Image (cartoon, rainbow over all chains, first blue to last red; front, side, top):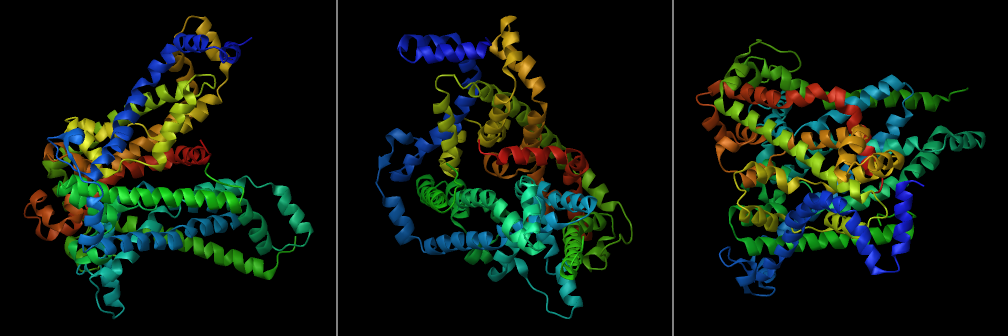
Length: 319
Length: 286
């Protein structure tokens, strides 16, 4: 009998008594020792910060720590919702940016995967894939740097093009109405190709006899795409949609910090960039934590709700 | 097989669409490369589009002269190497016991790890922990807070679970301890997953700027991406990095993007398959 099978049996036998469970653990203490650094990481950098969220309900002072600081209940939240003139703007910007992201950025890789799958020449398909994955490996700083310089009023190629077409030059980076387009546009440019990988994997997993059967039944190519390929992708689409909703509130603030300036806060400032300015730059820790907690709470509710709905209407869900 | 007209029209349109997509994807990258070796005046006035004009290496000469560039480059290499090594080691050490179905406490640890995907303390509490540990302005502020990625942990665990148990058993009977089994038997069999996780971690660290932005405030510690931000995005700051650059500034920006990105673009064709594999293992539910 192999040893792991032996161990399994021992474990099964051990269920009855606490003593032998303890013995199993003791016998494999090296395995726990191996996990120790990783567990320590989770405690220090994941769970202690969760405990640190308590300062959202305090008037936190670094000198006094979480134990000694004064508790003030929900006052930080009240300050945010009632006494921060920008609160509504931040919430609106966060939601709008993410809704645009879901509308334009989320479906794009699905469409591209379908089109790639219809390419008949395998070499050409591989070439398009290789090229389209590339921008994913560029850093956010490089992407924003390219955008900023291409859109520059006097030396950027975009404005040179507008000039050449006889149109007026546009100050893209200091006009609030352009921010969302630039943000979503660069996002799609960078992540469109990479986003197709999971969908292409799902398509590759579709049983080829389904297509044969459909052809025999007289389904044309477009009907096959709609009723077989697209249907085969639905589980992956659902999972990615839920994950997207979960990260929805977080997404993109690091890029926004690089891209925005006070002139376009009207559309560009989101909850997390505000948290960064007030917390990290302004050292207003309790207030910034409270605002951040409000956002995490919405994210959590969204992902739970999306998961529940997904479980009801389809067979797929995250848990 | 008879191919209908509409089907053929679609094929043609599809190929044209894909060609357009390729062009749109490549053009910005090609333009950066072309502009970086062109005459700065011609670039600024929009006379450079697809082929270099007034070929000159002046921008690269200026960039390579910057003492700050080499400090930053070295810092980025340092941070990337240390992070990748530690991440692989610590993640494997944690994933290996978690792959043993019979291990008491395994479920609890997995649940606690998975929960961090749904909820976390957020920016400020994490920032305060790093600050109170005295890690500000050290390499540890960059490496430790992102040491274990829960997705990679699950990917590795899934991979280890699929390894045949017989080899491990043989090694154990021969007197190998758990660490020995992991290092001598499991890891050599797990090169694909280690390669994937290692490459993902390395690229992520090479490209990251935000942790450096909030945890480092000494120039000597800055990684490449922070320098890049200073030169390419913050116009005002570029003067402090590139003194009296004048008209060169526009091409210096493109040159410094090339210098910072070249390593990734060079290895990209070779490592692409690992990334694609990894992205797919990661997609399967952990």
